[in-house]
Length: 234
Image 1 (cartoon, rainbow, N blue to C red):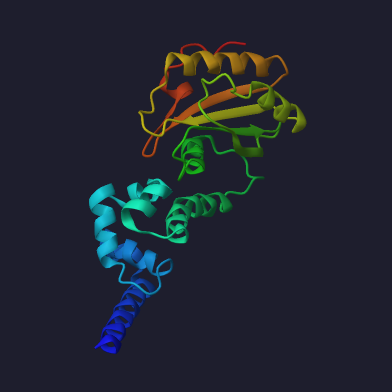
Image 2: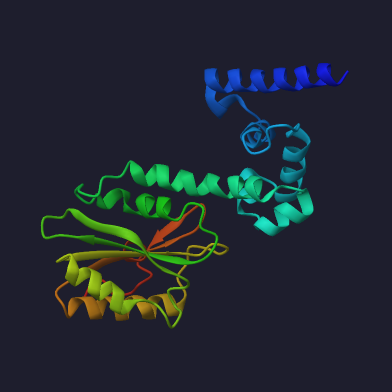
């Protein structure tokens, strides 16, 4: 009987793998996709019931991947390796997106919001991203420069200035995320943006825009008009 069950279990996995190879995840239900992903972290156990339990608790795959590791271990019996494997999914997605973005491309202003949004995939805490451009309009730097709120006392204004000088930048673009909120700026967001822009202008660098990013949306402070005259004075 045990051998029969094992054969049936193996056959189910093979059928799902074949289904994925032929169609990708487009034809999968969310629980099937999560079940299959967990194959590779839990090789000797039926992951279907676990996938259902996780989705019942966290509602969607994003919620599952964002769950705390200790919660996944203590409440769902996942090993540390299995919990880490889940946490890697959004991080690898972000790295995949970033790897397709060449750092020597001309800055595409129309798609900057989407580019910044991709930088925050899988981040469940606040972070700040900086992009720098040269005199020819090419991107010469793009990275997360701070973990934490843009409004916190450790906002790296000095680091922004140092990076701009080091790369001989002429333009700068800033973004930070609101992981659990809306893409609307607070008064502190606007005040900090003004300080950063004035500081950069003093060294000949123009802060062109500041984006606020959430899981599903982003807002350009410049284009939305919510920044007042911050981006329209010298």
